[in-house]
Length: 318
Image (tube, rainbow, N blue to C red; front, side, top):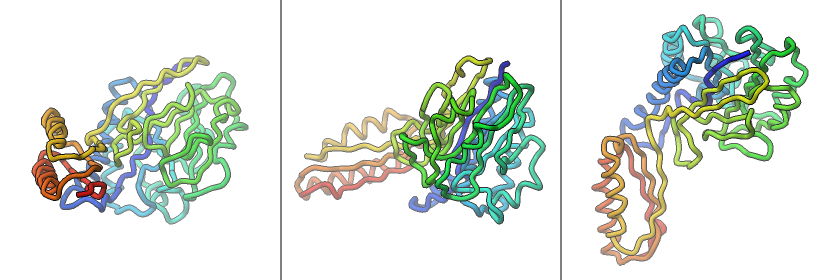
């Protein structure tokens, strides 16, 4: 039994990025939508027939209708792919939320999983989804998978959003997930969401991370996972880069304005990619007041070469 699919999560369509000036929030939001097209192309190129989205498709429970319409139009544009969407902690599946308005008008190739019940993805392949109905829960939403009935020899794929116990989460969810679920539920693969970086928990349990980075954390964001299942053997998991923007955080020890030169050189080496780079500099050290002025002047001149430059000089003493 073979099955190939794309594992992704944490799209957070509609995120506002309110701390950025000018038109930057709109450009950042737009790339979260455009990431869907990059995911579709990656899935098609890899021979996938399904895309599993492990929660937080949207950034909030209430989303403008125009935005949900844009997303559904994108998904519909790839009819050869079956899109399986799971409510997460940002967009739980409770009444009155974003999913209530959508479930009656979904394209034929899109399915939202609002109930914890087995769903056939293909002959001998079963999806076990664990949708969230609230932002927080003290119980493990994947517990039902242990007793979920499937045919003998079927490939069982778990789909969930939350914090694997002993690992933690960068999201807001207080949703505990037992990492032993793979064994207790006989899962061929456990597709997880909530941690925004690509992370291997075990050979059969992975966080895909967000396909489009949304912060300065150094946790390998901006990927999706192509997963190939072949019988009872361990899955073959391949990272696929999907990011448009790159977010970089850097600490710089300051003793004169000249220490900015390596930063300027690194930005120059980026070439065209600089326009897709967000750089955050944390500056610390001791310099004369005149040097501090030169440092800030050089950083102001550097800013237009990047999509966004943020710098913090509170760690500098003059």
